[in-house]
Image (cartoon, rainbow, N blue to C red; front, side):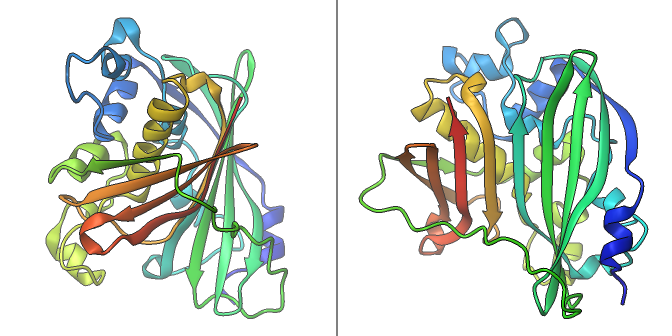
Length: 285
């Protein structure tokens, strides 16, 4: 079997130094569609270095050479065909606010391997700390088709009860035609998001938007509308990638307040509200 769960979980972690500065943060925010209107004081917090704060989802791209998904797929015990790999979900847990500039140590490992029958799920964990202590923990859930069925642990259920009642807030966010081309400059160079021919080979009629771009854009919408624009209130952010987004579409983001945070559902307006992000929670103070 290409995945040896015990060997993968027992493998030595991979560690590397990462750095970032205000330009990396600004580019990431612009890749999410920040800066419209360009002179809006609320948007200047994302684009102007003298007022800059850092959206917590920046943790998914900070130091783009850090241990991550591709690195994890080459760990001992893991030999998979990249064509069978899907990014199934993402969680970021914040230990303290992310500074505008930083140098930190990122340690990556496979925290768990789950047997879903017709597929396996790898949980790739990256823990990041600087000289002052832990900063954030990233968990990427990687879905590998055709690699399950060995009788292993199925893992916990991540499905949430559907929210009841009307959303507390609904916003729509247009995705620019060049959104994926800008977002990929933050470090995800997968041609699926830029090359039409490659996209066709992957089964799409045109390039698709990065799931993590939708992830960041959605968090920005929650922070701006329900958290008074205060990025430091976010404690964790979890989602399941339920469908694709094409540049040029419009996202409908529905938000329900909960005792422990905000539950969110994201859909594509032009495709009859096709689900994009599901089982999504932003925990906050």
